[in-house]
Image (cartoon, rainbow, N blue to C red; front, side, top):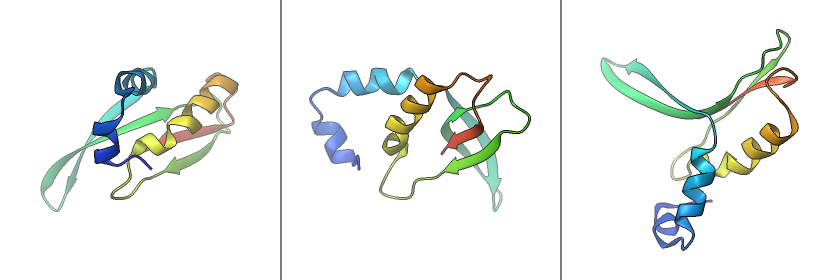
Length: 90
């Protein structure tokens, strides 16, 4: 698990930043109890109509970096045309 402290101490932080920035990332605006919030997430979208939706969510104090190896693995194995599922990581 990546904590804020381990991120600050990470000697190869630029290498990890590069890995993160190579992934498709998005933001979405939502309103909860009248307050506006911005969600940041990585997502892989399939072009297949029969794709199965899968959502991986992290909780505090973890972050989406825990899913980075999984996203890299899936992107390396499938293209959007043959991805068997829609994979969202929040």
